[in-house]
Each structure stands twice: as structure tokens, then as C-alpha cells.
Image (cartoon, rainbow, N blue to C red; front, side):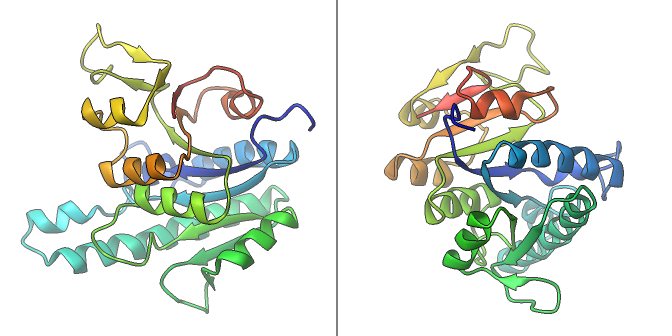
Length: 237
């Protein structure tokens, strides 16, 4: 599509997007709904890579609260992201989208190891690439993994798809007077301590001039509009 503003995107999705109504596990219907949205983006001619979180199964801080070793807790979270990646792969392929899962932690019986050039080649061939296992290292969030992979694959934008339609000065679900920012600079986002993304990921994007777009994944047609350059969500650049 000639009027696209962004031709290659890294889509960061939280694990909760796949969860059932109680916020736990995987709801196949929600996975299929996400797959339809990704399919529509792919049909526009956009190269798509996805990093998915594990909040529907496990968060490292849960282990810390129970006295678990930080590295162990983080590795458990990385493994949970692979479960989500496989579920999303299955849903995408049921919609006719050719998909590859690559993982930062090798598990060759279920996925390819992450190799940057191979991931890029898959996208050039029209395949959606799902990148599981975070960075493969403890102490880094899936936000940071998304920022790192966005740079590595030459993405034009990192889209963080959430349940909120952008970045606000405070939680809009709690404060009715919360103000939405249509645009922010990286420094503003960091200095205001806005908690839509961790500071390591934000700094990495700032240092490498990777624009970040935060939008509501469940809003109709929002991904298509974003990729065409319409003003949706919040743009951090």
C-alpha cells in the first residue's frame, strides 16, 4: 500500500491480551481476535514482528514477593512468553497467516532460535515473526526486549498495544480528570515517570531514535489508521 507511513512494525502485546476474563490463562477467542487484527495489518503489506509478554501466566515480581531468586523468576516469565507465542502462532495460521516463532532461549523442538537476519528474511517473505523468550536474559522486561528487537530488525515504529487509548498523566481508570498526551518526547516520558513502559526500554528507544506508539489494541481499525499515519493513541518520539 503506497500511502503507508510505516512499512515494518514491532508490535508489543501484553500477555493479558490473550487472557480469559479473569486475567489468567489463554482464551482462544481472544487469540483469534488478535490474529484477525494482525492479519489485516499484514494484508496492507506491512512487515510484522511481535513480542508478547507473559502477564497472563507469570510476572517476575510475583516470585520476588515470595522470596524467589530474581533470575529464576525472570526465566520462568521468559518460558511463559513462549507458551503465548505458540498460542498466537496457532491462531494466526488458522487465519491463513504464515507465521514463525523464534525464541531467545533455544528450544528447537517448538521454535527456531532467534537469529536477526533470519527473522528479517521471514518478514521479507511475508511471514509474521513472533519473538518469544524476552531478551534471553534475566533483569530485562519484555518492553526492553521489544525495544531491542525493534532496533535489530529495522522497524519503523514500536507499537505498544494496550487496553488504554494512549498515555495519560495518571491512571484514567482511577482518575476521571486524567489528561491524555497526543505526543510526548522521550525525555518528557522519562522525567514524568509515566508507567506505560519501563525506563530501560524508553532510554534504548531514545538513544536509537525509535518512535513508540501507544494505542488501544481493541479499538476498531486502530492499527490500520496508525500505520497510515493518522493521529491515534500517543506518539513518543
